[in-house]
Length: 265
Ligand code: HPA
Image (cartoon, rainbow, N blue to C red):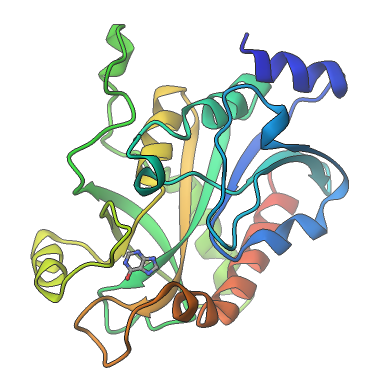
């Protein structure tokens, strides 16, 4: 058992979250809905990264929504911050070590689909790792050879779609392509990504999905579309603009997430 898992369990006996959640940029207010949360700063947890990008706060929260016990990572480290693709290895393994059987990831993404405009939400069906790096580089055992076909759980996704239909939320779906950032993509890169089959682009999530699949967790992921990808609109891309456009999508994504967890069994 890892040091972080031991430490958390020593502070909060009997804790057994079923679902882990990783919150993307701007989604931090989700934690306000937790009943009686217990929170740890990443600084307290052995092997956890600094999570310093604006809109991110490095905290692990344990709490409940209805009867569902959850563990929420507020703040992620990105590959572009340190050049290390395994920056989220300890946090993801900690969620698995605490007992999470499922992991829901959220992020901000640029859209390559005209139909999915800024402020909308997309369920990720699959991904393309366009960075050439992998969080399992350097792992020694044979469990580094992780099966990534059907990485995104279709049962969880169809539950999100049912909730979206019931609550009148438009939920797009598509393939997410991981670019390493931190500069945004060029227009030519986005045209190439489109030809490869991508529907949305971002700088996160894929390493955590690989780590979660290796740890045996079921995975689902939702993107808030904050902008049209490079070359698809006249807007100049910036982090500030990305965050400003996110509001409507953030509200819809949070509603989907809360309902999903209320109904979780
Ligand atoms: N590209 C990469 N990452 C992003 C984008 C984008 O257009 N929007 C939000 N995150």
